[in-house]
Amino acid sequence: MKMYEKAPAKINLMLDVLSKRADGFHEVEMIMTMVDLADRLELSELKRDSIIISSQAGYIPLDEKNLAFQAARLIKDRYNVKSGVHIHLDKRIPVAAGLAGGSSDAAATLRGLNRLWRLGIPAQELQELGAELGSDVPFCVTGGTALATGRGERLTPIQSPPQCWVVLAKPPINVSTAEVYGRVRANSIAVHPSASRMQAAIEAGDFAAVCAGLGNVLEDVTLKLHPEVQQLKEAMVKLGADGVLMSGSGPTVFGLVSKQSKVARIYNGLRGFCKEVYAVRSLS
Ligand code: ATP
Image 1 (cartoon, rainbow, N blue to C red):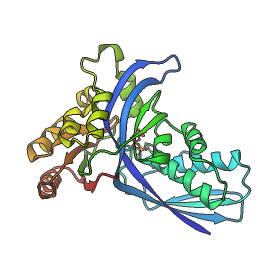
Image 2: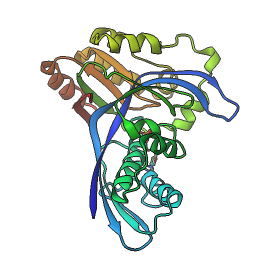
Image 3: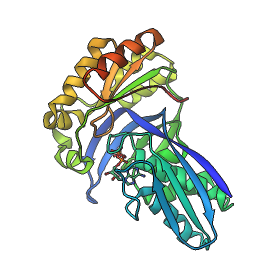
Image 4: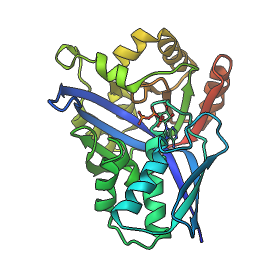
């Protein structure tokens, strides 16, 4: 028996850090949505009791460090499943990019194994399992668009933003999410993006207001560490994107574009100095 799952990338339309908590995590406020850039998972049932991960991508761990492996082990242990699974990851989302590729693979594994092993786990419970694997996993379980609070695991689904093109560019640098959060000083953030204003813009279907409301307080940290991310943002604005922001802790920068006629120019302009560029649709 085989199952297929798509694991889309997420972008943050806004990301605010409110405080640092006693448990070391940060209290955040984020509006996240999915884009049509996705990993593909093939899940094949194994008679023997083991979890095997394979991938065409040479640069991700294939052992228990892989988030899909961790998701499979969690669901197997919790629901006492005796059979095993081979998960093949066709990676298309750039890794360590701020696009939650690993989290989305973990979420797709939870969804896929729920079907493959006919466990009948309700979505809410799958999200709770996801929270044990990482802060972004619960959102990736259901996708759509959501306001995320707490450490990112408390979700309120909201309407999707007006459909548009999303051009993503990942510069060839590695950004450590832990380092970026470690450097954020919540009480010295000058301008906080507004979740309520972004939500209102989305609900009004006002694309210009969505672009105007984009904001990510982690940009200050990552842009200081990596000035090339700032250059990429400036290039995207100059090439005509309607709104530009860094996703998550970076280094991927995305541009929202309403007119298809502008997309090729932005894509080609960025390809001049950045190898990893994608032009995709937002997902509603
Ligand atoms: P986030 O936006 O949630 O911080 P990210 O997009 O920055 O995530 P990922 O692509 O999820 O980062 O990768 C982060 C790290 O996790 C990488 O260093 C990678 O080795 C490891 N990893 C574990 N499992 C996976 C997976 N299935 N796909 C990609 N990376 C994985």
